[in-house]
Image (cartoon, rainbow, N blue to C red; front, side, top):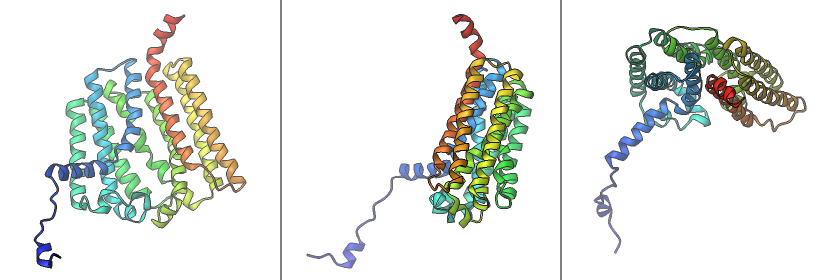
Length: 320
């Protein structure tokens, strides 16, 4: 016997368990912080702390600094998500972000960003106990939110170059948390990341060129030829490798670090050169994402070498 309309309307709608609803909300707020981006930033923090301490820094300080770095980077990313929600809505790559889907309202996202910012600053001031690291954290958040997101991103093709300075700050913050000072070594680590950022990010911009063009964001691959982008990538990659090698005499690094820095740097630079050569022949299979992933491998290798290098003299002596 068929059900009538009134009978159907009386069937209760399935209810979503509270715990599942809460889990989804937490995931949405975590997504605002872009944790996968933060992971890459923390790769540069711990090695800087180990180099500053010439060995393992206190475990408590290390954990507190890494958690504080996660919070401060997450706060900056949350502001970025709020400010760029109009761009995210028209780009295929970002259409599923929480502010676009409506999982988080703009007001709630802004309150969340400010809350995490305040917590992260107080975290460095009170728990890490480093006024210098606190100041650098504030500058990093301002640099990313105001400098990059609000001023540079929509106005200049060099947005990621100068806006990327904020992403270089974890090396300084990690060093400052240990020593409450700065030196040449953390500035060289800073510069490695600075020169690395354009050849790391521009391949991603090439892959999603149409998205950026549709959103009217003037990333260099949108407004310039692949040949020009590749030339600039090679220049930055060479500067990156040179800077990583300058760290050898300045930081007293071993030949192991020098070999890894030179070998991985040459490998990644060759990838940029290969991109240039393919562009000359009009090759449409530019393999941008492979180069993007290779850049992450390069940075991980170099900073892993920085991480283990303070322990190598004793190991090499024991082997000799």
